[in-house]
Amino acid sequence: MRISYDFHIHSALSPCGDEEATPCNIVAMASVKGLDAIAISDHNAIGNVKTAMECGEAFGVTVLPAVEVQTAEDIHVLALFPDYEKLEKFFSTLNFPEIENKPDIFGNQYFYDSDNEITGEETRYLLSGAEEDIYTVCRRIKEYGGKAVPAHIDREANGILAILGEIPPDLSFDALEFSPYADETIKDKYHIFRRLTDSDAHRPTDISDPVNFLEAEENSVEAVFAAI
Image (cartoon, rainbow, N blue to C red; front, side):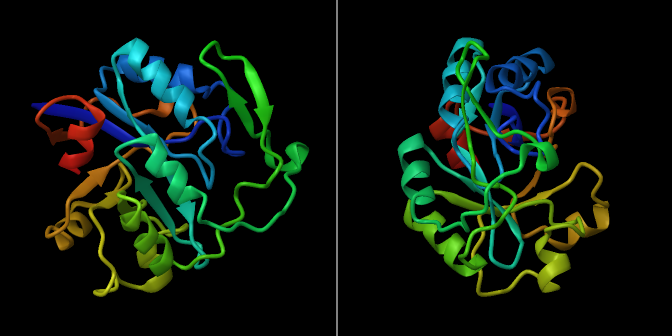
């Protein structure tokens, strides 16, 4: 079956995320827009993923466990997993500098429950990247059963092409992600890869419309994950 998706959405846990981007609001907006599957891919944090998955069950939207990791080279990589436990185990292997967030400068980093109530706040500044390089991050993603997807490779900021100049042939990726504004020429250049297009939304209204699709056996976390 055809699955409409958006696997790169930031919640209010990301300091650059809008405070209206609670897990429940994100899932509700995805449902209103007609999306089948999404992922909350916050910057270097997973604290709102479980709530989003709970809300997904209520709204009939499949929510993949995910995180957007910033590597030591400042490359952004989406890490997608078939269940929350694998995501949690992978994430626990990463090391981040203990830089305290300054909400008045960088923005708040809130955890939410399914009733849109704030349950806590992340004090570590989440736009500071992991200490592991891209090779280590991608290897660990696979070791813990996930799929590694370099994010928005067509963009200058934190894209693998802008930083490394090319996709290293000794790095194994499951897909490449493009922004909605990527030129077809660059997409065609990497036709041998699974190509995803995601919104990188930082507020609910910027979540993708149902214009990007995968073919999956069914609309479930396991089937959508396998289709990537």
